[in-house]
Image 1 (cartoon, helix red, strand yellow):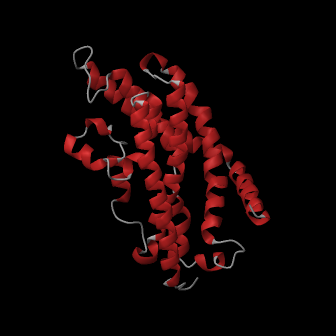
Image 2 (cartoon, one colour):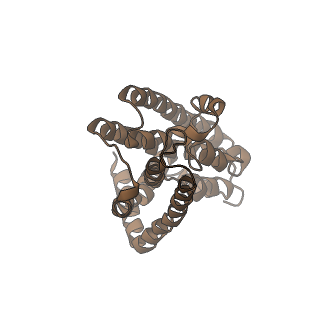
Image 3 (cartoon, one colour):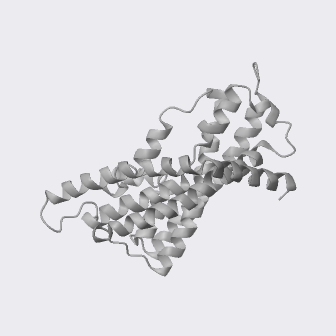
Length: 267
């Protein structure tokens, strides 16, 4: 790692810590939608006979799912496309970045992980475990050494997956000048944010296996919950790794082709 990149990482980490109170508050706000989902599902299961399961989830599994899913979501959260890349391309701010001593991709990567990921990582770990303890009577987490290890590997790849995915979305602004339509909706629905994928129609589940959306959050969530065998988890990790490589390849292709057509009007 070059001295310039190290300096950038340190400076961006210092900037993020300058606003640590507002950062913590913004994270705390995400708890309320989580609690609303939990209350909704508890009401749904409460209206059903005792022992009811939906898609293999009983009430405790469902509460656990949303807690773990939200925590993984926060750890893999990325908005580098709307926050950094699209404004730079559309408004001409990319021009001075092209004269940096490192490539723009490396610059954005270092800036993201120092400014967004690191403080978010520690804030998430500070908020969610105590919150899960408060709901311990409603949570059923079957965490084993194997699921913990495989889940951490999947979570790490999920972070890279999310970053590369949003890099691709952002770099598409070279052609679209905005975020691709429905990109967020696809991620939320097909990624299991609205309802678990296990509750979706069987035909949609079969199609979704070949799409990238469930491999950012849903896969590590299922692994951490102990809802997948070691064999199933390893198969999922292999597909996740494949998608990570595809997205990284896509970032490089979009950047090389996009920068050739870049024009900084008024930049």
